[in-house]
Figure (cartoon, protein in one colour):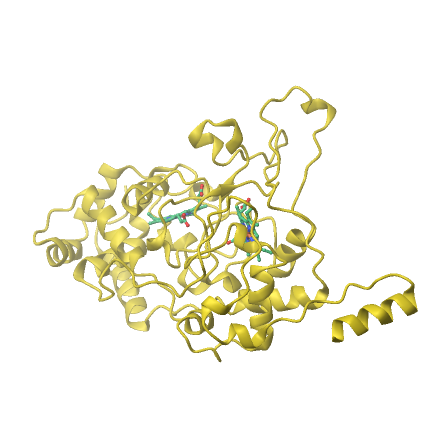
Length: 382
Ligand code: HEC
Ligand code: HEC
């Protein structure tokens, strides 16, 4: 009724129909999910309904191995220079990322890809922007030896940790004997990272049935996320990702910033410029965005999608380039109004809770460790 009056008014005053926004069925969203409007997804998309974060596969209780993993995660002796730890880039105070467009590593060399947050990383089947690792154990080896990241050699890392007497006790607590091995190091790192799950977000509480956990604006955002925003084509299911690879047009094909993404792993022409759909919990705290960190804020991400993503033109110089990628068909201009964009942003923020700070007691453990090493003769890393 209201919509019809608005339309009539638009016709009379402007001589052309003014698109009146569909009213959002707030009451339906406050009821069971089965009564929600269906999402607008393209044909063939095997979408999965949104849901609260499932129980983790691991026992949420910390074991001695988890605690050892945390000590290793914060240990700069895992790097060639003895100065860079995993936490240098995955910083708990910055939602387990670094707040930078791209990180810098050994010799302050800039990387090429944005550091992902590690929030809920244990739930993912494929790791890295191009999916080149499929377990946390396998992944941990990559930054350790990468010369732009930590530039370490596994044998030297083991030898070094053997020189810190405290590790003998920590390894015994975790594994039953003091043997320090590379597989144990990566296993402990993986175990620790599997415990980095988000505390309950307003969205999770809402999905578990407390339908007042989201306010009207956030529910409107949820509605645009499912419908006119078309986000559910790729961000769906309990993790808000299909864990598949798509090209949003940010690959800079043939230009200095070129990143071919998934293609480098699969060798399939269709994978050029495709990157893994990131999960979205915690996203309010993990700017800047995208595999190359090009988009500074959530508002800009939404403006980008509203335009239909990036569609770099195939210039004359690429006429014969068989690998020139095309942007995903799922991306089209969305015609979302300012108010709708604000709603969507409010919804994305409701997917996040401020990350836990590091316990002060653990910070003291790190300080003690650094002091002990400084006092120990010949303790400088080699
Ligand atoms: C120099 C910065 C830097 C350091 C140090 C670093 N990382 Fe990363 N990490 C990154 C970047 C950048 C990526 C994404 C790389 C890519 O996709 O190509 C990443 C990706 C990851 C991922 C995959 C996350 C996902 O969503 O797929 C995990 C897990 C991870 N790092 C754990 C670690 C661990 C464990 C260490 C220490 C052994 C470590 N990182 C050290 C920058 C760093
Ligand atoms: C075609 C599949 C697809 C659709 C549709 C889509 N996304 Fe994405 N989204 C992705 C992929 C893939 C990336 C990473 C792309 C890259 O880095 O090049 C991404 C990145 C993001 C990021 C940045 C996350 C980060 O950690 O850097 C946000 C936020 C986001 N999407 C939200 C949305 C919203 C909101 C919508 C709907 C308006 C949407 N997406 C629609 C696939 C999609």
